[in-house]
Image (cartoon, rainbow over all chains, first blue to last red):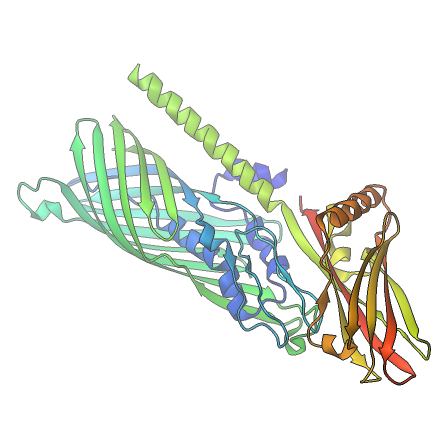
Length: 292
Length: 184
């Protein structure tokens, strides 16, 4: 119940419980297996943090200000719900795949030290994320900020900082038929002692306004790196030297390029937008913005 | 009219967000844990049939103990027989593995004319039928809900077909349960 309230009240990214559970789930997995198990989550974090950064390419030539709430629904493809473990201990064979963080049941493989039981996943196909952000623009450039002061949830502290810099290119092109802008994004997200996420992205996007409606689209390059930390446990005594050791693993998301297409409706200072991005994981983004 | 439609769509969107968010939180609050373990079963002797049996109980399993008060359901998933060592290397026989729960029918599988040493690195998996699993799991769930510890008797008997006495097989029965855990 507490977690539900947290979700509803703070309306913010992921509940920290997904990260708190990682310790339970990662357990005896080796570095490589942790990478395979959590990589789809790393991709999701990258997809989420790098979404919702624009809904028009127009940038105020004088001064502008905006406050936005963006909601992202990320779709997890089936091929990111399972993986086949590599480098299993001697005597074990991965006869069938097991679940990633988004899959269903974990597989138990028989072998000379008993069943090697892999962790189950969350068994979900979509992941929602919500992001508040503010932006200010001046003379054809815009600064966007995403910030969350350190919040304690249970034993974990969660914090977020991100910014985006956007610059209008079309202002240099006389009689340009569409607005064109380029943008750089940087985000960090931390849950104490469990996960550190850092993202960068570059994009070029264009938009065309027809009365109240604006159509927009863009191409983005992005990269995500997530550092996970967990305590190794060794129930099968296959890696006794590591038992109880703190393990740090760095996992790169599979997100690299995405293509976005969307539309915005502007009613005075209120803007409502929706877009879809094609990439390693598809993401549907909607947003409500107050801007002038 | 247009504004009314936009507000309606917006309210529907917010409802979708909140309901989907709660679904995800529900997923985060449950965890399906593999509860794997092993029990030593060491038949030995000079007779033509050597037998040993041991109980394994979930209350003895470390993983289960971590979640014991949060387990909502339990299912028996897999079992396997393997050999740590066979003291009489040339022993052969029909190896019968029996799993007998406290309530309900026992499950028996036999490997004919087997050399126990063949199962040192490659366990023999007991392929349980759908009906065996259903009956077993119905009984286990009833026991769980009644607050009883879940125990199963693992028995290994070997009918010797060749070899030199005394016979001794250092056997192991591996098991894996799947437990639905409520983390809330």
